[in-house]
Length: 325
Image (spheres, rainbow, N blue to C red):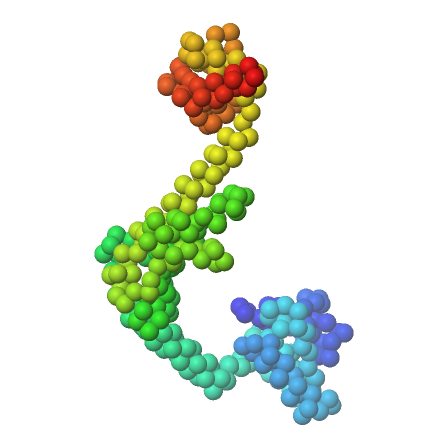
């Protein structure tokens, strides 16, 4: 609290004539003839209990007090005027107005410290149990080259794989890492799981392996789970590409560009960093060029040249047949 006496102010509107919150400056020669005390507590609750005791036991003819909870210091300090006792002799405020510190009850402090020690011991025992229960699996995972990122009472996590441990039996799971809005492809993730030698739960959307009796066998399943996730990713990519190809129409301008590309190839130039692709007299910009590359109709051979692919030739031949029909 620092020097709380420096905060003592004159305030005729309070019971004691003093305040720690508001008022005028205090002059020693204006102090009353009766005794003034400052009682300082560890907490506002203790100060409140003290005031309650004064209210129950005090005699207003011989005792007055001021408690103004507002600031951190005023919350914990009570000004007491003992009207039936003479002011102590002295030339300074510290000599005339005693500050009485009330330490926290030792019983409460001891109980709190004892409680904290019990909690710390319980936490220490819990962590020791967790360490012992997961040690063999963590060691096996790290020996297999997998970094353990987190672990708890009955689980260990490495990357996006989580291992559960129940009665010495290990089970591994990981989410399917699905991305995008095409949820139809998820119905085929069972194929990815079967190819990788794991299982897939279409309701939980995760791959799983196990149960395993030993930590080494469980650790070996990480690569199979990762393979399943990779196969699912390739399925999504293939599904996206198929949908993209289906959406690409062989318009008249594309047919002319592909025809010219089949006859003389494609040259690429850049104007103000923007790509331009030329095939005969046909020109396409960067957006259209990238669409043709992604759909697989043309192949970019270098920064300045490209060519039509076998798929592009097939699409062009089909378009010519349809036009002739």
